[in-house]
View 1 (cartoon, rainbow, N blue to C red):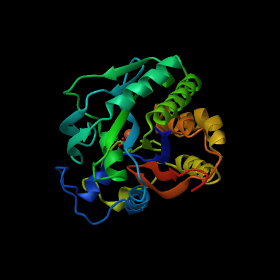
View 2 (cartoon, rainbow, N blue to C red):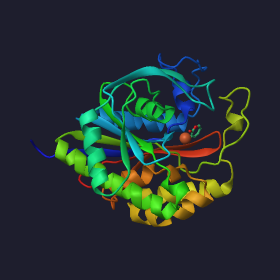
View 3 (tube, helix red, strand yellow):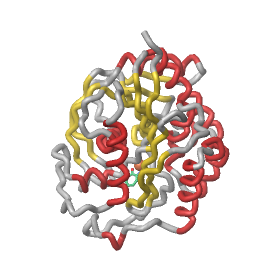
Length: 297
Ligand code: 2X7
Ligand code: FE2
């Protein structure tokens, strides 16, 4: 068996608004279809095209909206179906999902992370309702739903201990993910499902698509987003990790839930540029679609 490989690492944020705007048949609420949040849609279209041109077996996703109290959990049942509802925006996202899980690979990531001293669990409840972060990012990155997924929860170390100790765990979880992919012989696409700056408005316009309400929450948030995207474009991911505790605190970044650091850990902390396909705000939060295709591509 040849060595497995991470063929692409992606920053793939999950505002449910983007699924709502696209009107896929799986989502119950209907939008006008007039093209709200266009910059992010264009970004996701570029990512879809890039992934469509690749040969891969599995999508591995780290999601902030499956929050686990003790340790990091992985879906451990071969198939899930049901209705995923965003608890904050049930008016925008009620998505009928039907997906397959690569349980072998999930178990192998679990074991590799345990060997690094992390608290890990396989989630074996067949009635589990898969969270909207997973569904949204998977759908926007690859709407065909023809690949198995591996889904990793968001542990609580950042909030229980410190940003610094949380970051160390996420790097170790990323390295464990890469080790398991390489052992598996499979070709994997990784999705870090997270917004960048994450202060959002606390009230909604009557029409969620109304563009006059769509802007960044404040200039501090966009300054951080621009800075982080500049570092991504320059391949300075180690600097992003060095500054991550400040980014988390000052921009209320959703990266606190660990997805971006996990991705960097799995990719060996890229020193090559990420391709920024799009940036835009959703209800005041900053979101970017970015792909690291590896130094050779
Ligand atoms: O979960 C989210 C998010 N991260 C950003 C924007 C809007 C809604 O949900
Ligand atoms: Fe979120």
